[in-house]
Length: 340
Image: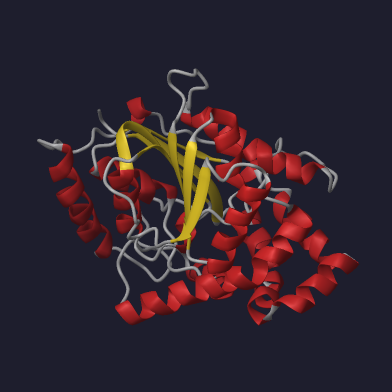
């Protein structure tokens, strides 16, 4: 079951005389409000420079270790698949479900396939080994640039692009999503497929996505969130915080936030056509399938060859299933457009 936050149902964004003033002051104002109610698992606040460096190094090392294993078993796409709710699927269906995730994301965001309106310049923020970028480049004929913290991923993504004749369309580099190496307003499609959960400062993350988006461009965020808090709640329950902490420790994640937090951040920047939906039921078969693949002989032997970080992540997979089943973890899509 899903719930959509349609623009007509959202509170009006705060007035701002210009886009630039909204970008500079909107996020900081909202951040101050969030700080007053932040808990150990719900935060858009910043961490110390040392902690941020340690987190970035951990993320890079985790994906340096694990990406070859994931590619060997699952292929190009390092993200959930999209399924019909309560469906039973075979292992062979999962790669198709990952491609369907891209298509359903584009459909939800209203990305046009009209040659005169389709995206021409795309940034893939948290690109993995470049699966989404290559797909979008082929689908739209677009130029795509991807950034990742993992040198291994960037190198592999560029190698795959060259091998598939796409080196003139897509390129990848090591880059920080919170300090993107791009000028303002460069991209008409800003794509973040399951990278937001790694961001220690959600306000800065959203601000950077907006900064590099061209006027009238589309921003897509597909990410793991925790459930929205009830009006009477200041924080998640202790057992919920403890479960998320275990997952954070395994996957190098900072504090989580809710879908509602993302929507408010986007509103604070006066972005338009804000929509959000809960796709948790549509990704339910994914984590059991990942566990099943790890328990095969190929998966098990490959896992042993990776490293301790990957093994630790594999052992935490049942925690993700628990989080989904208890309605704590939400798989969210949030999309919007930048004003013209």
